[in-house]
Amino acid sequence: VVELSREKGRISSLGSQTYKIRAFSSGGSTNGRENFALETKENDDMMHDGNTSKTGMRAVPKDDAVINVLIEAIHNAARDFLFDTAVVLAERLVAFRADDASLCLLAENLLHIGHTFRAEQVLV
Image (tube, rainbow, N blue to C red; front, top):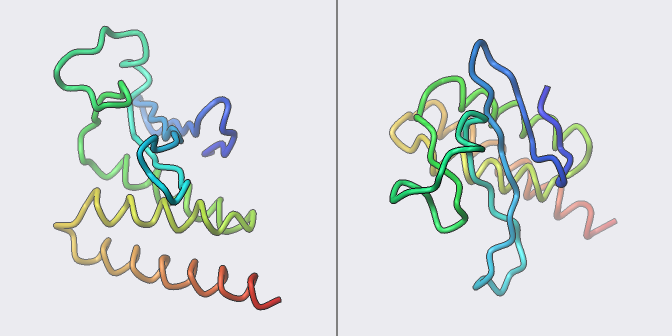
């Protein structure tokens, strides 16, 4: 299960590996949107080194387990009507596996659905 709690991050256990999707605000951004970073639970207590991002989160391997976490988080966000979150996660999925045509198509469809729902919310 992927938790959508901002305080605790979004966690999913897949096999022996636990992944977390953390939300963080982009300081220099003017649009105020949240960004998402992926990390492994094992890295939480590790010293940060040159492999860490500006947010201090270590990158995780681009494997199917991480993709499944992202897809699950997107579905959960859409189910809970958190369409902005679903759209941002879908954008992250596009960036994460841009070399996978089927995943790109899925993410683009999710983006289209997310933008449509957001437009409908504004119209209503």
